[in-house]
Length: 81
Image (cartoon, one colour):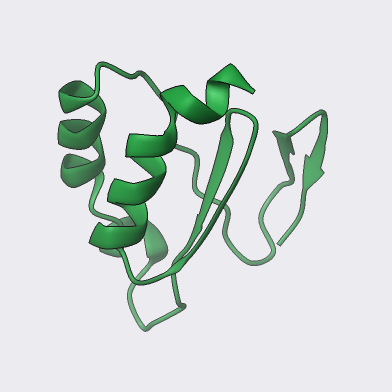
């Protein structure tokens, strides 16, 4: 429950900055970026996320999930795309 209070500012900032689908379960956040001609990694504003994390004194690991790529650990399971 306390984690929700600590990450509330982060959740609000992400929803405000990025008009994509966003969801968070405990400490795992998912930001869905629409597929376009460029790669998702090229479109993802990593610098904005880094700045936001620094501003809120948070640390995170950013992982890109691409269609047909390897599954990644997420919320004690695997996330497939």
